[in-house]
Amino acid sequence: MDRFELTEWLRRSTAVMVTAVVMSTMAGCTQVTDWLQGRPPAAADNPVILGAPEAEAYLKELHDLAAGDPATQAEIFADADAAATLTPGPNTQLRLALVLATPGHPESNPEKAQRLLREILAQEQLLTPAEVSLATIHLNNIERFIVANAEARRLRATNSQAARTEEQAVNQRLSRVEAENRQLRRDLEEAEDKLEAITSIERSIREQE
Image (cartoon, rainbow, N blue to C red; front, top):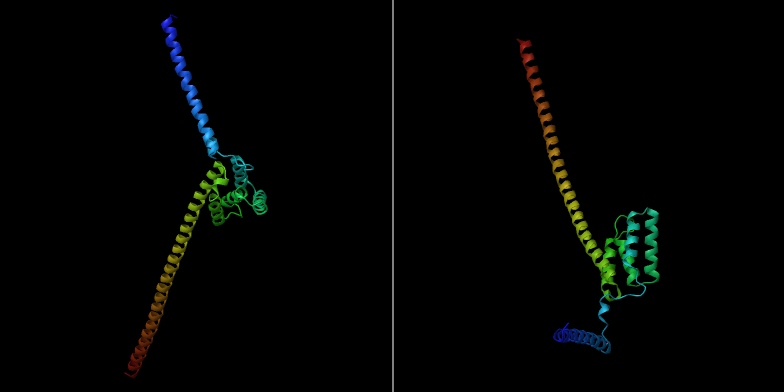
């Protein structure tokens, strides 16, 4: 390497080093400024909530609830309900809300789950990002379920009303037909009586002749 190449290499290396030092200094200044101004560091985008369960814990319990027998389901609900009552907080309330939002067990309660999830999401800052995601997803699902269930009830009620109306119309038609049949029988009896009377008169006339 000649002198010119050596000089050029040193110049480029120095430029890279200066750039790295400046960037490091700027990053350090930003962190110090944030600390002095009371702002959390950039890592706070994913805060760690002390005592908050992992998402896997919620998912495992929901799986056990959906796949378990009635005794297991009752035990999971009782435990979640007791925890929410004895140590109320966003985490225990979320656990209970997720249990209530899960269909297929006797304690499922979509309306109560919807109310709890809305209250929990109002305290989003006390939840981990995973808990916020779980609450949001289940709230959206449960709200769609409630709307669909209400529509199903409306359709059943409409069908029942239509069936009752149709049944009333059929009964009215049957009543009219039965009344017409009774009238026809009376008319037939009257005609038979008249025919019998005419036959008797004719018989009497022939006997007299």
